[in-house]
Length: 81
Image 1 (cartoon, rainbow, N blue to C red):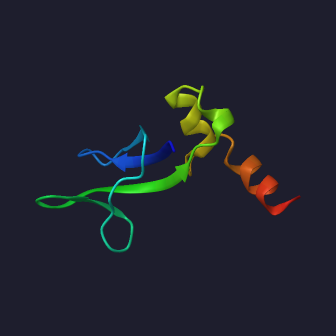
Image 2 (image 1 turned 45 degrees about the horizontal axis):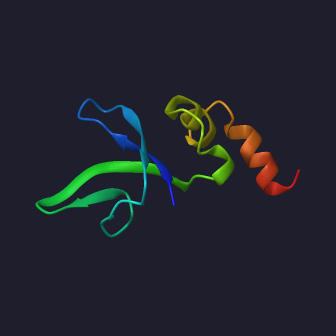
């Protein structure tokens, strides 16, 4: 299972991340759990469809990111419109 999410950098920007499994999250699901405490904030945690696994990271960002170019297309298809 591959997952896509965005992680906040030290400069306050969202960086796309592609991982083989979901990160271990703290209660509330907004931060990664680290051995020394709380890690960076994350958003947009989604499992990647099998048909999308060949896409580049920037293409995945446009498709899966909350700020992505195709965000409105996904919302309409999810509602069945």
